[in-house]
Image (tube, one colour):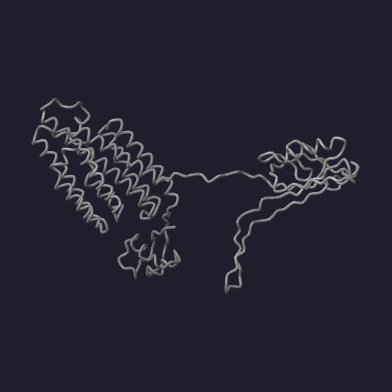
Amino acid sequence: MGWREEQRRVAHSDGMGVGATFRGVPFHTTESDTGVGRRNEVHEYPLRDLPYADDLGRRAREFQVNGYVVGENYLQERDALIEALEAYGPGELIHPKYGMLNVVVVGRVSIRESHSEGGIARFAITFAEAGENTFPQAATSTQDGVHDAADALGSASVDRFASLVDVAGAAALAADLVSRVNSSLDSLQRLVGLNGLVDLAGDIVRGVSSIADRLSTLIRTPETLALKLQSLYQQLGLAIKRPQSAIADLRAEYGSNDPAPWTAPVNSASPPQGATSARRVVNAAAVEEFTRSQVIATQARILTDAIEAKEVTTAPEARDQAEVVLEEIDHELEAYDPPAQMAAALIALRVAIVRDVAEQADRLQQRATYTTQAMLPALLIAQRVYQDGSRADELVTRNQVRNPLFVPAGQLEVLR
């Protein structure tokens, strides 16, 4: 209805106002004020003429309603309205001008009664829109999820190694196990050199030497040996300086397209007592399985940290690197048929990697092309493309330009 019709309705009601309700309790209302606006915080800085207004969002709308209850039963109606106004939480206000609103009572409600004006109680109420009570939600970092899954796989491999390895009763068993662990340590030390580690390279090399020096003793306590080896792989993951090449180097050093010929017996029953040859096979398989699991966990850590640090710069690169690690996991599951605990840890790590890359890839830059019509210096092209000449080296490296002063005309790969 239009405002004229509303005014006529008020007049025809003998000036008693228009009906409203709060939490279902009726009262009359004749006047109302609405407060609206935005929460702008104006900042004025020393020695600057122009201020800055920081828009913090819309203000909560407030409704100042003046109303009353009147008549023979006004005391009961007054008390019912007071009870509704003092009730906990938001309530429904039905108002002739505002319609139906979900509101809360703000501040003090004024109730005025007079001896000269009997049979009536007047109210001055301020309502505000209730809105939604949205609390900050704790978000689980997908990067932490990968690290947790990698740690779980590492722990499962430690338990598995400790349950399988046994060198008791035969010097030949101990010598063979020492040789195999030393081979794994040599591979680890080669990776340190390949990746040009600086900060933690010395720590890793010293750790390798410490284990090698005590290996004849450590093999008597397989769990302790496995934990020390796991610590070295974790240090390697933290120290990597070239993550993309590190993942490839790890795969080249440890990866295999086919299971080793001695893998199958690792899941069989324990060999008979004194069966040295069978025990040697189980020990060897345990070392290889442990190493593969630790390498997979290390690759996963390197990948998620590199994406987070923007060392993997584009979404396609992140997905390509993830495929390398996922292929290692799939190969481990299909070719080696690990026991249930190991399989569950591998699958959990696979799920964590897929989720993490999907989440982080959206924040990475996308590849694009930029075409030049003449030979130009990389500095000028970087300024045109990125409005940042300091990214000239990135442009040169990405496009394998021989001389940054003379970038050939044609299409260049850039990041957006």
